[in-house]
Length: 83
Image 1 (cartoon, rainbow, N blue to C red):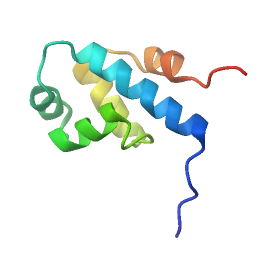
Image 2: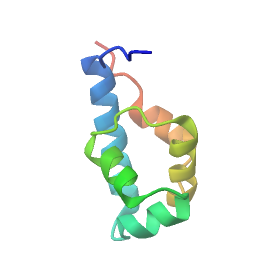
Image 3: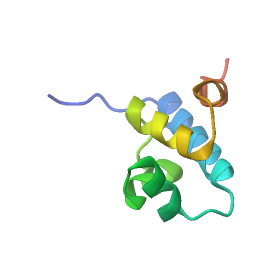
């Protein structure tokens, strides 16, 4: 199955998610947060930099738990920007 290319809005939403996660991580290392979330540091790096703009729901949920964020906070901060 071929994936459709991401829209500019989807890419922007992924960038907002990455910024939110970086801010929530603060001074803690990527390795530390990735380990708590059960992910590789490289996966977290890709999400934070926007190279993986559409991570799976359970990946986002694991990161939210590791960072003390609610899924509501993530949804509000990463919702599409009204035009």
